[in-house]
Image (tube, rainbow, N blue to C red; front, side):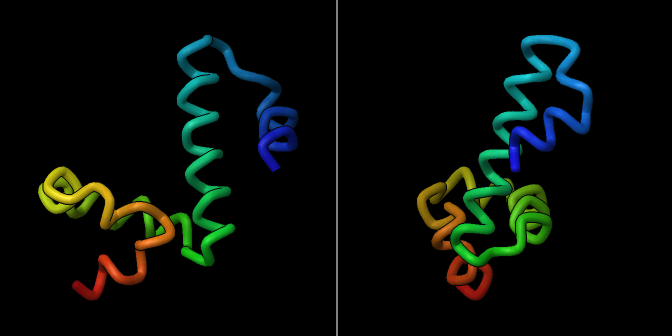
Length: 70
C-alpha cells in the first residue's frame, strides 16, 4: 500500500516530506490492521489534543474504539 502511494505520488520532493508521508502511511496501515477507520482516528486525535497528551497510550490505534467511549 505504501509503495503504491509513493509510486502514484511520483515520489517525495524532500526528505522531510518522505518522513511525514511515511509516518501517515504507517498510521493509516496500523489503523486498518486494527479495524479502526483511519480518517476518524486522525480526526479524533486532532479534536482531543489535551486527552491525547494526558494519556497517549489510550489513544493508540488498537485502543481507539475504547478511547472514544471513555
